[in-house]
Length: 209
Image (tube, rainbow, N blue to C red; front, side, top):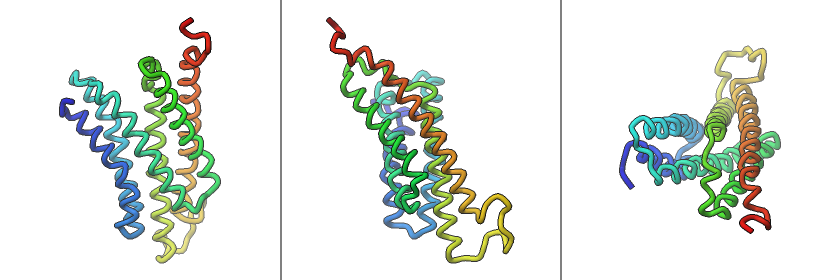
């Protein structure tokens, strides 16, 4: 592996994945929530930059192609588990989270089964948008949990007047985050079906005969 900047960004994003639960273990709230928010915003930015820089500088590599989607999945899956727990097992969050987790496991299984033919399931542009939507949604949800934890023990952030479209800033962030993660779940399902459709000929008992 060459230690190019795109590969370094990918490795850093992969190493950052387990930091999410560690933040809630070692940092007090709401600092842990806001730290996770910043981490996901940075991850979303580096996710775009590592591929862009690799193509721009001609530094695309097999290591980057393999590790980039793994880093994305590790970040998303770990964070979804954490955010679901700290959101009080909200059913409106559990369902899209289940779709996201199922798709990631399903596609990973397809790639493992296809082996050398797994190149058919290379990451598409829609899949990259899906990952970006997931990361932004999770970041906004962390903002919601952090604001909610803060508001419980403090006066309203905007005086005594409630927001016209929501009870509080935390509710607004949570509602926006839920809307975004449902959009991300829809994109996740679409890309999952696209990968399955591409793999179907290789799943037939008659393939290769």
